[in-house]
Length: 304
Image 1: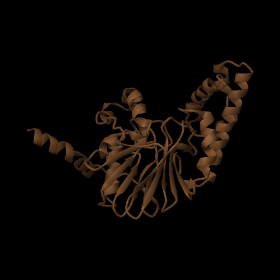
Image 2: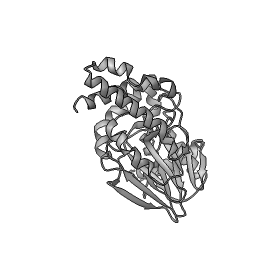
Image 3: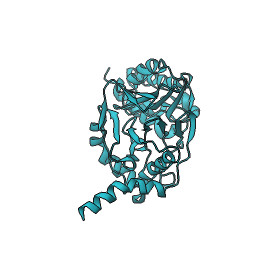
Image 4: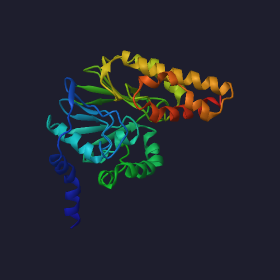
């Protein structure tokens, strides 16, 4: 009986992806595939599929970059991979620990698969995972969340790490606290494609869950990466490094406005309501996130 249960558990990802409709993906460079998430808030209507996710195929292995906002989306990504290659999935890389990027992890749990993340990601998942599960269950419902479980990384990155996929090397780089405290980027040396996670937003307003000062501080280092194109965490695949211009302007404007208000003694609520107002028409979901960003920035600058 125990053996039968084990067989079912191990086989279930394969059975599930065979039953799921493959997620639509675009081949943006040879062997590099991306599904562009909707610029929207997560909901039951969109299955939480609001982040960009993808995969890179080498001659010996596949690396998955983020798994989406539900196990359903993860299974559909798995089906898309299997429609294009029979190579083993060796690495599942989480660019950070927000639900829209890692709630699909359970679809990829199998022998031989390593989950890769920032060295601070396990702590972030342990601390916030239960809250994320409860919050997203209320937003998206039991049907989407029942299969979701927090799958922590088994391979941690502190600095940089090279992964060999077979005649193709990808470089994982861990970053200081910026968008979050557990951001990594994935650079495919062969195609010069950068998966930036939520260190880069395009069209979707940047979301601050780390340090605005550090985020601004790493932008030059990000821009110096020798990429031709970037896959942002949210928004369209774009040329690099020009894709950083709008984010740099927004974060700089927000920081300038908030620092001025802190020095001037303006209350946090008033400051947050007016900060970066000049950016309102430039970003989707501005009204959903800007006040939260401003509040987080204010809390940093008032301690300078």
